[in-house]
Length: 383
Ligand code: EPS
Image 1 (cartoon, protein in one colour):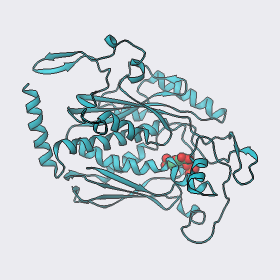
Image 2: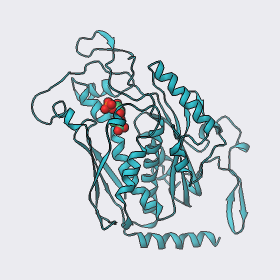
Image 3: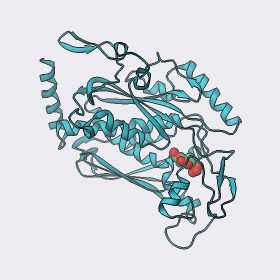
Image 4: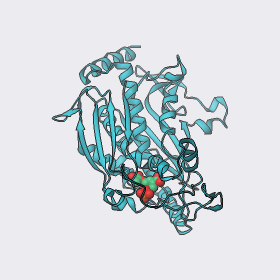
């Protein structure tokens, strides 16, 4: 129902994204999209490019006088560094610049060269780079503006960087995003933030990189998004796919997924109560889905990001041309980008949830969707 496609190389002229399936009548503010793009650049431990460049946004279609038209919405994010890369990344002419033949372990370099029969790993890294996530955040910012009309809010915070952890008690609410973004590492726990910053400082000193875990929380969901009737309709499965698709993500959990695996059943579920005319839960161990269906209220998804694979002290590799044992090539890089990945996680979750809402409540225009949601909620509340 809602689909998006991104295009663009990391050092090409621009990134493009087309979002198709947005209903009509949704207030769309391009300033909000730009602010979301700026949020993705946040975080202690990012590399020099984040300072050099700004994500300059153009909204090309699908919106008129501040409202969506139901036609495809297209965004362009120009790379302000393009003039420096014009020769290296030219769509025409002969190769200019170094050919990269020393693939970085952990990156897509080697598998990409073998799969696509390429002899320059720049042809791989330009597209596998996490630069592409700027386009996803653009699409996610559109989805968020739709969800906001239905009082659904999506936030994220960083819970682990390397060996530094935030307190498990530090659970932000829907209004806490500003406070989270004010933290250098987008951590909601000030003590945790301190430990994380120290961890990044140490890794920077040692010319190494760090991964971590972020949590995305969506507030205000109705009961009944997703379905148990078939595997590919399960909300948790769709979330896992979407979040796992973010560059460098190697693990996804819903609620207390991995911790619950070590507990007994009697400690792992959310008991059901009936208070003031509503079914309620007093815990949220499941993270907001049961049987692949949203339970109503908050949804929690965590993702594990591996330490970035571009290193200042590169690992051993093989030169694909000479087959000599060498060290991998060096690129400009971040030390840690978990805070930014959290913002990308919000976007991916927002895109999944917007699609789920459209599947459940129809997809033509905001007014009809609202009415359908209200009628549905009235039925649920009457039980
Ligand atoms: C990235 C390497 C760095 C990051 C980049 C992702 O880029 P460069 O090699 O140009 O310095 O800055 O991230 C972004 C440009 C971005 O917008 O997030 C990589 O190898 O994935």
